[in-house]
Structures are given as structure tokens and as C-alpha cells.
Length: 497
Image (cartoon, rainbow, N blue to C red; front, side, top):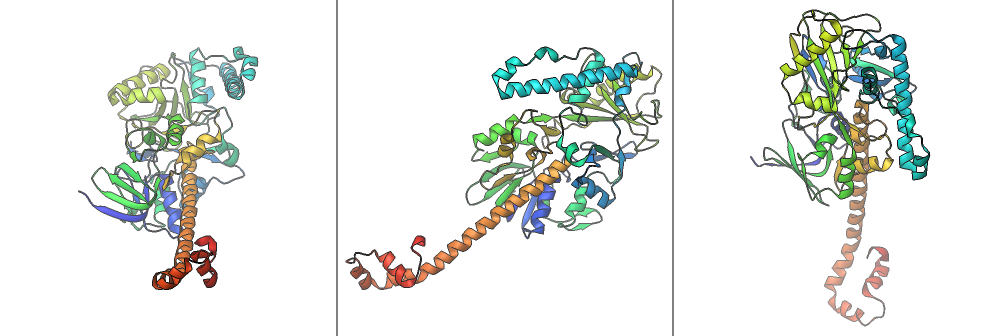
């Protein structure tokens, strides 16, 4: 198959940033656009799946940053569309830490370990600042203040502080700007319902389905050619799409992979900025049981397993608060552990998880009757869960990673300096990128208007110079150049000649 389609703007990727960018463009008169999505659905890393009789979120699951002075725009969308959510209280998780014998660590021990871990994390942050700022500061810093976690409880708490998405030591713009409340999406329509509600404002929909050729699913972009005059995109099925501009709304993991080739290649400053960004893999494993055997009630939603191996089935959550009677547990793995379990069978993962649960709750607990293991790392359309910039990072990295290359614009949560890693970061970046493109389109139209005006003014002059050859021959004898002489007579500014 080899067909060509032309439009004003191509948007690659139908995640939250791609949809929000398209919505803003359409609202501002740029309706001749095409959204190319590699998978068979919109949403990107927002994805629901039916499991155990309920709808669970495989990717983004929380609306983080609620209750502050400023309104989180995603929280506003959720309220507007009536999305069902459930408040998540992590404050008691540190007091529900189990050892390998099934005993819960005394609250005093847990509190002391948590305090020690926070202090150590702050010292580590200061040491990194010292290393970045100057060699003298680094020499004067007491590195002995930084303690390395060694015991299972120390390793577990260190994992919660640094690897688990919802608890970080350094100030997070999401919490300082929008509030510290976090709400788990618990709606049968899924988190993705917000994207469908956005899409239906500019795409034709019927009974919850998008029925319009401006959104094209199962279109895997493999090559992006760009020049001063436009862009051409080639998909895996041989289709070619041409446009004046492209917005690339793919994950940082995809940008770091070889899925999409650029012709000419991206400049070095761009590729270096992309490579500097870390990709976090965040895996929520869902387990369905015939009945619940874990503690429920206030302060019991989250619990922690302390193991000699850092991050080994550490953070657990039951779904009874969200879906009473569902009998579902969720355990979160990240990075190295995520990649490890993605490479093994679900049955092997189930065996490991059950061994951990029997350590915590005893040998007589029932076997899980079903398991669901997302594989974000091995998904070539995602290659990870979200971006993570080094703690000590200047704004230059963000400026470079979101800066356009000619007519190719970049968007996504990884381009958001203040909210990278969050759904609202992707949403706001799509808006910012589309507004930057609209400004570029405005400038180009203004330039075309000026050029057309110049051409219109010059037409009588050109006709005159071409028809009156005798006059032109005579002008060669004048000391005043003919262009200047004629322009003065016709009132044409010399600057445009």
C-alpha cells in the first residue's frame, strides 16, 4: 500500500498530550489535521482493562495534586465529566510494614526508620547540589552524614521514598502548586474517559466511539522527513502523510528507541537532551483471590513488605476501598524489577508474589485465581512508564527537549519542566505546544502577507522595466540606479527592492 494524504498538521500519538494539542488547534481554526496513533485505542499510557469483574488502570491511575490553592486541570476535567475517584491516604503505609516472618514492625521502629531515611535523602540531595555547584562545596561537605540503607526495613522505606511515584523527598511542583491530595480513578469508563470527552469536542463521535478519519488508529510511524517547506511521515503500512507541521507526542522511551527515524537526523543538542532523561518503568501487578485475607479498615489500604532485596514486591494495596468485594490486591514494582518480571512468565511472577504473601499472611491463604501483568517496557509504542529527570537539573535540559526542530514540534509529559511524570503534565504540555505552533503559523502567514504585498507593489515596476527598453537603455547613462529612480517615481520604498 502506498497512498499520500496531505493536511496542515500531523499529530503523532493520541495520548493525553496529543489529544489536548489537537483540541486547542481545532478550537483555533486549524481543523485540517490528522492524528496518527500506533495502537488500536487512544490514551497512550492511560489504559484500562477489565479484570476480576472491575475496571483497573494499567498505567496512570491517580489524579495527583488536589486540594491546593490552584485547581489541577485534570481534576477539573474529572469533576466536569463525573469521573468516579477515591481518596488515597498513604500516611499510614509506613506503619503497616511486614517482615518475612509476617510480623508488623512496631510503630516506633517504623517511624524512626522513616525519619532516618528522610534525613539521609535530604543529605544526599544536598551533596548532589554541592557536587553540581562547585568543587569547593563538595570538598567541604560531610559525606559521612549520608547513610546507606542496609536492613530490610531501611531498604523498603528507601524504595518508597525514591522509587514509588507517590512519595518523593524533594519538593514536587505538583503538590506545591495544586495540593497534596491524591485520588485513585475508580470508574468503569476508565481514566481514558477524560480523553474521549476532550476528543468529542472536535471529532465526530457516536455512542462513545470516535468515528472520523482525522483520527487514524494502528498507524505506526517509522520515518519523519522534515525540511523548510514541510514534513512527510511514513507509516509501517506504507502510507505517506504530508503536512506543513508535525507535533510529535510520543513517550521519552520511544524517542530514545529506534522506532522513528528522522531525515535529516535530529541535531546533536536535541538527541543529547533526549538521552539525558531517565525512563521509569512502573508496573502494577493485579491479583484476584476467591476471598480476602488481608486486614481492611481505616489506615490499612496500603502495606509494605520488607525484604533483603530492594524493591522486591515491596508496595501493596488492596482494592476494597475502591471496589468492595472485588478481592483484588495490587503490588507495584519499578525499574529493574519491572524489567525482570516482564521477561518471565506470568505464572512465575504469580509464584513469587504468592510466596511473599504467604510470608506476610501465613501458609494457609488461598491461591490467586487470576493475575494481570502489564508490560510497559517491552511495549515498543511506550518503552517505559514516565520520564524522570535528575534531581539536580537545570532548565536547559527542558528547553532543549521541548524546542522544535524546524517544523517538527515536541510535546508530552517529558517536556513539562514543572509537572513531568504526571497526567496533568502531559495535558498542559499539549496545550503549550499547540499554542507555540499557532504562534508559528501566525508568523508564517504574516510573512506571506508581506511578501504578497511586496510582489503586488513590484508588478507595475517589473512591467514597466520589461516593456520600455529604450527608456531603460537611456537610464544606463544616468548616475542614479534605475531601481532607485523608478522606485522614487512610483513611491515604492527602497528597502523592499
